[in-house]
Figure 1: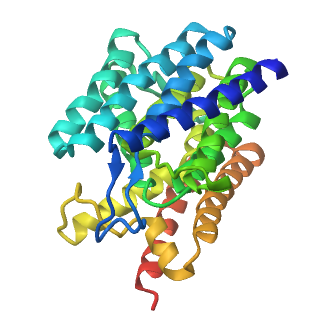
Figure 2: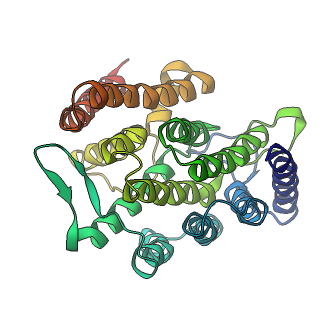
Figure 3: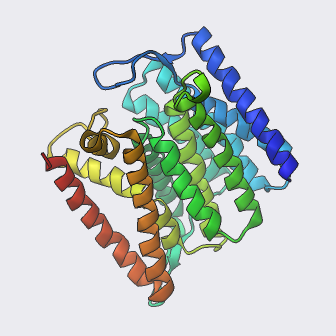
Length: 331
């Protein structure tokens, strides 16, 4: 297995390097503007390259399982959707319509939908006939929540790694642990390009990357929940920062009567960077906050009960909104 991991790492590097070179040759580049602060046109097909490496991993690691392999395979379609959006600048309706296609396929055709939200001693949250629409809504929201974090070097990558690391130590299944390693490796190698280490050409995840990661993690969480490997409230805590930020920013925009789908500089990473002037501190703060949230949720679940953990999830969201607003107003 170690040999396969080493071979896979080399393949990942070659694929990402090749895609980066191709993108610069064919002008598949993100151009700086008032909102985008990078200094020169930069390749935006990092997610597309990662999706190819995940397809390769299906052949190389033939032990993950049909359902998990299917999630990785259909993830490639979601990466294509993101690439099309980056290339042709789709409007909101066109973007969401294309996103729904691979999501709908896994939920309805392959029957990968969330069936329950956990046992809370006094009651069980079963979705029954509401399973399909609820799953469709949750996946669509989480996919776009991941997209919200893709606005600064490393932010989405490190935040995603924080979630995957939590899941690695949380889930008992060796197949899912292997899948997590398979996903983390290309993200880590991508970061070398993202920060232009060793003078490598700079590379962004692009929408292909943010939509891909949100899509894959969404369905991994669904699979874990349906197998009852981990209680759903703990899975929710593992992505708390994504859920909280997505809801908080949209509630704020509704309050201010702003367009929900307009790109802006009001995302958490922009707010923190404005205060710290440090990409490292921004990324560290966001990833560490996600891990701290999970620790709170885990301890309340482990030493009190699941219902308390669920209540705390809601309370911490309110606290998050208040602190976020205070950070916005800080001069």
